[in-house]
Length: 379
Image (cartoon, rainbow, N blue to C red; front, side):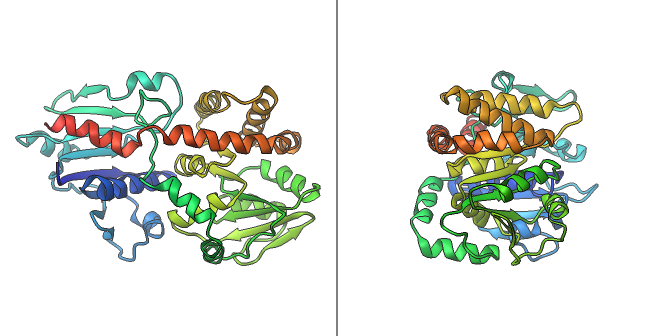
């Protein structure tokens, strides 16, 4: 297929996480799979900075992708060959009816949240006939095994990471873009992107009182409130603050490529949600995941399912250190002992993170798996 039309729908729930994933998918489908993509977003304002858009209503931040404002009650013209409901968002009934009325209905994909749980393999690509319309919905599950849809990874990503790490000028340019000086060479470099978390107080205190210099870059976001509370003053970009052996650097909001480069520049990355969680794995460095909390604690089941896969091959003490700090961080608990164990294991965890990245990068990426599947349905 030389050109095909896709509609991707996204409702913004977690600021930039949902639209971040949908935007990466749209961009990759256009650049690597010759797709013409309309990305329908209900909250255009939240994603405008992320996508580098200036217009108030729609825009074309990349060839092949048009970003459209999905207004309540509006019904886009059903022209697509493939329709993706991002993160199970509900498509308008009138749009579904228009899809069904076509002589050849589009392939309808519901893109689910990423999970390492075993049951995902059994549900990936399951068809679900619509109860009233001549439409079939297919559930697409990202994941970490060959029986799932894989992870989002654009072509050449790992090679681009290595080129950046070998380019001192590019690194200096990225620090300037982030609004901070480069960290001292001897410091442990950490990026801290998370939801509000009471655990941050004990973590920052441990670093400030520890025996090793720590540089902690804090991208603009919800964790700023927790950091400011510990610091006793508001955060401002461009204003690094020292507390003992800790240097805190509030970082400016940047687009996805610059954030990737921050992850590549650090020895350890704290990430949250789904999008930055995946990008931290492509950085090939240790990371701590602040998973999106759910009322029934289902997020902790997802966390453990991931950790079961991730720590495979690690020595037992190192695996235990990974589990302990991930649970402490997600529970908002005291981080003092968890950090002591994790920090001691960092050299071996660094090698493990690189090996995990290589293992995942050897598998087909999500956009390719999705494109291949939909082509089989369009034949």
